[in-house]
Length: 402
Image 1 (cartoon, rainbow, N blue to C red):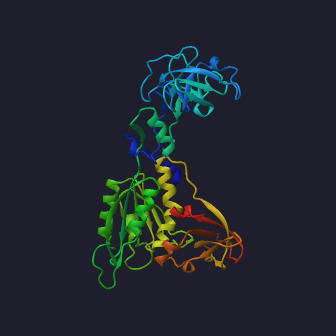
Image 2 (spheres, helix red, strand yellow):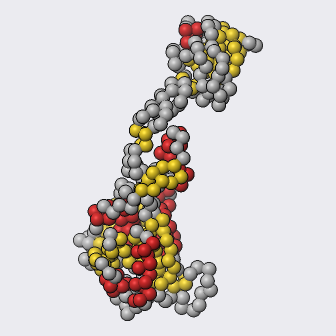
Image 3 (cartoon, rainbow, N blue to C red):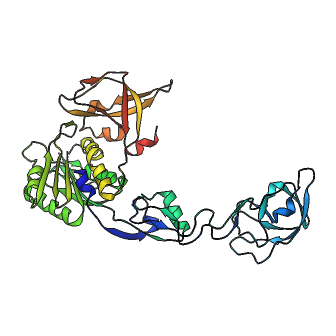
C-alpha cells in the first residue's frame, strides 16, 4: 500500500520561504551568486597588508598607521597602503590593498597608530568571496526536506520563494452520536470530541495540512456524504469511530460502498486497534481508525504517519527510541501484536523504567497525556517480565524528555 501511496504525484507549488519549513524540495537549489559576495572579515580588528606584519612578535611588535575605518554594510572607498592599517569589524568587506585581518586582541592602539603583536599569513581571518558557496553550485538537492538550516541557506542566496512538492491535505472527522464539539454544552450521556483534535495535531506534526470536517453521525448516508466530501477536498481521509462490531458501526460498509473503492483490509491483528479499516478510492487512501482516543492515536503513528510521509515525498522518519526496563509484567493479546502505552521514570541509579499506563486501557483518556511512548510485544511472545529490557518508541513532544 505504501508503495502505491509513494507513487502519488501531488504536483509542485511555489511558496514563500517563511512558510516552507517541513516542505520537500521539488528541484535542486542552485546558487545564483557567490556567498559571501565579497571578501569579508571574520573577526574584529585591523585590515592590513600581511607582509607588513612579518616578524611581529609579542616582545617585538610592528607599528602601523591607522588610515581609517570600514563601515559595515557598505563597500569601503579607501585603500590600505604599505605600513597602514584600517579598523574593521566582523562581516565587513575587506578594503582594497588589504590581504589579512589582525584580531583586535593581538593589537594595542596608540592614538593614530596600532601595535601588531603577531605576524599574519595572507588571507588570515578573511573569508574570500565564494568561500562558503560558489555561484552555480548545487546547494540543496531535490527531495530535501526543509528545516531551519536549509531555510537559512536559501535565504542567504536572496531567494524568498521556493518550489516544493505540494503538502498533502488530510480530511479528518469523528463519528458517533455521543460526540459533541468542545465549547458546546455537554448533555448527559455525551462526551467531547478528542480524536479530531489529537489527530489533526498529529497530521500537522507529520508534515501535512488537516481539514477538519467536524462530527458525523453513525448513519450510512451521512458517512458516505462525509467521505465523498473529504475525497473532494483532500488527498487522504482519516476518520475515527464506527469500525467495531456494534449495530452503529457502519464505517466499513460506508467505505466499501463508495464508487471505485478498493478495501485494503478491515481488521488487523494488533491490540489496541484491531478494528482499523483501510480503503483506497482513486489513489486516495482512507483510514478508519478506532474511536478510543489512545487506539486512534497509536494506529495513526503505526500506519497513517508513514503513509503521509510517503505521499509528501519525505524519507520515512522513524520515531526516537530508547532502551528501558519493564516496570511491571506486560502481557500480550493471544495471536495479536500488542502495543503497551508506558510512562518513563529515571531512577537514582540512572536506569530508566517503562511503567504501563492504565494497564493498557485504550479507552482511558488520561493515557494520552500520561504516556511517553509504547512498547511493542510480538504476537508470539506471551509476556514481557518485570525488569526485562524493552524498546520504548517515543511519541510526539515526549521525545524531548529523555
